[in-house]
Amino acid sequence: MQDKIIMKESNPFIIEVNGKKYWIKKFGTKIIDHKMHGGETVFVPFDEKKLKADVEFIVDNIEKLIDKKELLKEVFTNMEIDRIEKIRKLVCKKAPVKKTRGCYGITIGDGSSGEYIQLA
Image (cartoon, rainbow, N blue to C red; front, side, top):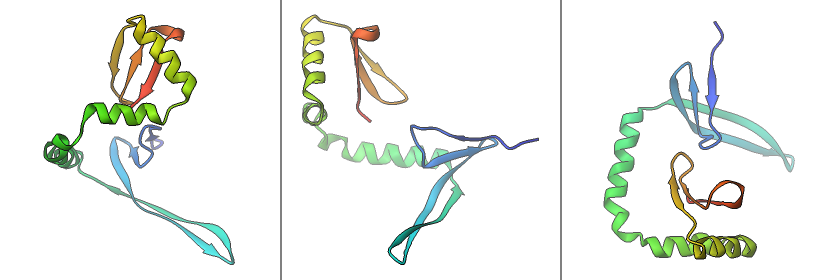
């Protein structure tokens, strides 16, 4: 039986081998004679339940410091002007807005005329 190895584009720091997950603990490169040389990448198993608990703990303790309006302003400040104009037109037309999971973001409008904004 061949091993099944999965690496999702959404998180290249975690791989799954035959159903067991590993994260990158060490990723190294070396400069030898002014040239970059590949080092080694070390993956170690991790406890997914503990990771989720740690994330929940962090979020519970800092979420009060995050302002949604300020966060959205930052997202749009770093966006191309033509995308901002397109999104403004969609919002003016009261296009539907949907929250997406996986790659966390929002979709404004439908189909090819809509616009996806990745938040995380």
